[in-house]
Structures are given as structure tokens and as C-alpha cells.
Length: 389
Ligand code: PLP
Image 1 (tube, rainbow, N blue to C red):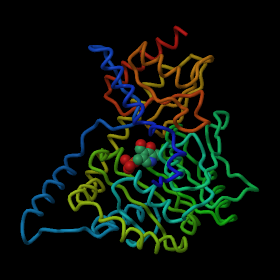
Image 2: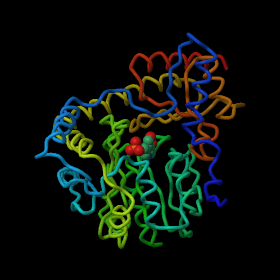
Image 3: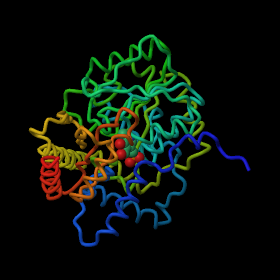
């Protein structure tokens, strides 16, 4: 039998699948013990009511002969794409409907975008969202990690003098929370244009920015010639279970737009009408207000969790543009050993930094997607634990 050798480059488990299994094993072995899971970054606030109502109405439309709909357009319904174009226009970015490709979330878009460039030399600043690295390996790309360091707040700098076909950027970053400034973005666009690289800009956390960093790669207008942007409804709007996101593939960036349309047409039958009506409602005035409130809630949780690190002489991300706390592990521990001991002694689940690439070793991540009560509880538990080391 023939297997895809590129899939053998992946480690045994997807980072968060392995984590879920070890947490399940810990719960089974410690019945009755309180466990606060700050490992996988899944949201806990419910969908905005306006989204639920729009989806309920859309479901009922599908029950009537007159309003029934079958296959959706592969790239998304015009009503949602118009809304997305309108949001960009409000930020001074001119896009057209045919540059938007609606999907079932950014994780799928990472694969779809990989299919646009075929086997390529790609550069991924790390620590990074594990799927980005995995999908590039699985696609047979030559993957170079660009290690980012705490002394530079984990911000990536272009590899001047080296040429890559594709550069993946994630801002605000998962897991470090670092966000590229306007100047940082300008440097990357300069680099991409000078070597003819495509930038893939993962903006899954765009809503979490602190207002000082650009929300979109297209705030540097030259990016329309060299960048694809990925956006998700998962975090602020609570769509991790519903599933919706979109890719922006500008026509000015060469053949990618045509190829995205052609490839989407043969491999994807579109996102359900019900979901897209929900996403449309998430972008309404009311939906956005709730999104903003949710983002604020999670960011406040992150600030509460950060109290665990005050006066502990350990580096942690002080930026406030993300739902994650990324912190150094105390000396003498690997990140995996530290997370295992943290779970054993406190019941708090964290993700080892090594899951996010080599540059993440020596660090760990706490997700702030939790209840306020759990944020306070975990902050105290982690702080007390660190005191004992
Ligand atoms: N991109 C980044 C950087 C993420 O952290 C995540 C999820 O945690 C995703 C993409 C996945 O987004 P979606 O739920 O839209 O697939």
C-alpha cells in the first residue's frame, strides 16, 4: 500500500488532541478533584442571541418550499460577503465581494490556502498555532521555523537575505499574544514584495487587538498585492461549534484569487445557509457589540491570570491584545514537565510551549477562555504553586 510520506513528518498526535486525552486520563484517575482546563483555547460564552435568532429563522426558511435552498455558493452567499466587505470598508480597506471566500473556519482555510501555492519553501515564525506548522508539513512544503524570542517580545523580524515563497504571520499571535505594529507590518510587506513571497496573515484574534496594532494586514495597502488574510468567527462571536470563517484573497495578488475560486469550486460545497445567516448577524451592530463585550471579558480573565506571575521573576506577556497568557517555566523544568506537575499539584491544565514549535520550549500557555470564577481560582492556584518552587 502507498501512504503519504509527508504525513509521517507530523508528530504522533495533533497537539490539542494529545492534551485532551491526558486531561481525560487525569480526571478519570482523580475523581472528584477540581480541574480547571486552560489548555485548549475553546470559548465558553454562549452565542449572541441575535445570532441564534437569525439561525433559527434561517432554519425555518429551509422548511418552506418557497424559501428552501440547496447547495450554497462555494465561496459564500452574497449577503454575508457584502457585510464583510462593509466591515473592511469601515476600516478604509476597499475589497470586492469576489475577493472574499467564506469557509467553515480558519483551520480549514490554512489547508485551502496551502493548496494555492503547491510545494513551496515556507517560513513560519514560532511559537505558532500548531495547525499552521502541521498543515504545511502535510502539504509537502519545506518548512523553516523562524524562532522568536522573549527579549524581542516574540515579535518576528523578516529574514533579510533569504528568500521564501510563503511567509505565515499570525497577529495577535497564538500563543504569545504579540501583535505586529504598523512598522513591523510594513517591514514584512517590504520583505514579501522584495522577494516575491506571499504573506498568509492569520487574523483569528484580530478582535483582541489593543487598538495600537493594525487589525488587518491590508492597513498597509501594498499588502493587497502580496497577502491573503484569514479571519474567524470562532472566538469573539463564539462560533467554535457553529464553524464559520473566511479568507480574503485579493485580485491584485496575482493568480491566487482565480485559483482559490477554481479550487473551491471542485473541493468545497460551501458553508450552510443557516450558519452564514448567523455569521451575518454576528456582524450586525448588535452582534458586534456582544462580540466586543465577550472579547473584553476574556481579556479581563487574562489580566486576572497574569496576577499569578507578579513578583515571581518569570517572564510573561504583558501585552493586553490576546486571550492567552504565555509565560516562562521556572528553571529546571521542561515545558512538558512543568505542565504535568502543574496539573498534578493544582488541577490547572496548561499547554506546554513546545507544542507551538521549538521556540516555545521553556514556556507554557494558559487560555483565558474560561469563566471569571475559574480565572480567579486558577490564578491563585498557579501563583501559590509557583511560590512553592
Ligand atoms: N488560527 C489561530 C491562530 C488559532 O489560534 C485558531 C484556533 O485556536 C484558529 C486559527 C482556528 O480557528 P477556527 O476555529 O476558525 O478554525
